Length: 212
Image 1 (cartoon, rainbow, N blue to C red):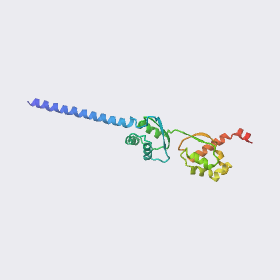
Image 2: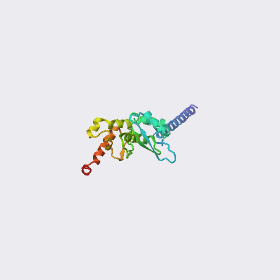
Image 3: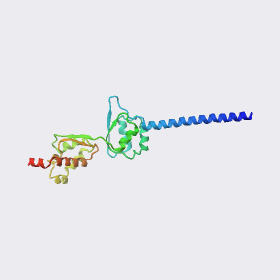
Image 4: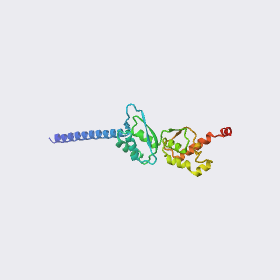
């Protein structure tokens, strides 16, 4: 009788242990699947006719602003999983401004890697038939992050104009009409310096000789 009781006790304990281990494995599997889903499941939603979208992250943006931009564009399926992985990958304190191309079916890992790398998509900046510096500043500000007042202040600076031998009347001539490639978050300073290089490249010795 004692042997039978001991056997029953051992048998009951084994069943309990097996059941416990099964539950642990199932629970662990569920946790693994949950973690996998947060990282690798698609977390971007587009309409059927949309293949890609662009988002613009302004200079000095924080992570809250990034989530707001993604949400306002109706892109994130689950903002909580995006936020969780962003913290794990230390993106929350490493925001890089710019214009980013968002493709269909990106998962959180791919999206965060893109934004964290700063691998933004350049923009085509075009201007022509502009007679005044005010018109120029307004046209440019519609295409890059720099605002028109900052651009206007930069090219209206007396010292800047004197170095080039120009004035308010003709300073706009350094902006050769064409289509140029810039990063969206280009500052006024960076934009004007690039245009000066293009101006000097355009007015090479041959063109100057012909103009004379």
